[in-house]
Amino acid sequence: MESKDEQLTIKRILEGETALFSHFVEQYSHSVYSMIVRIVQSREDAEELSQDAFLKAFSKLDTFKGDCSFSTWLFRIAYNTAISFVRKKKVILPAIDESIIETVSDEAVGTFFDEDENERRLQQLEIAIAQLNAEEKALITLFYLESKRVNELAMVFGLTTENVRVKLHRTRKKLFVLIKMQDGER
Image: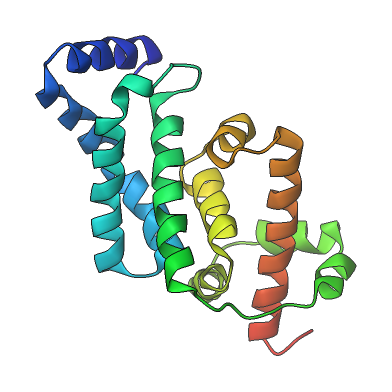
């Protein structure tokens, strides 16, 4: 949906045509669910949290200013909903020595992720993503699976674009280390 179309649809919803909100639900439900399930790692919780995110978006629709796309605004709500849930559960993630991540060369990471993806690599990647913290999971999901631009991610996460670039870079390195650890390498 184009930005102008979104703005018009939002205006109509706010004027009483509330059934039009279903267009947003249909258009973004899979994407919102995909991001949330990666963060909370439970399909049942992700389904419930996705519904919560859409309900929050609907109830707060009058606060949407249009300074970003509706999807970016919605992903921010969904991300915050999932993060709040995770914080309450106090999920414990494996610790990785930051010095290991620092020693990984950008070239090694680039070569590793540019290689042909095979089924084993995809399985390793899924396992590694599950070991990331909630913010890293959301960042990877939105950037690679939802093709969100860095400036959109900055709005979702409340960060600067440079900070998003740094976090993406470090998260790719962390994934590299996690996959190498699966292979028994350090």
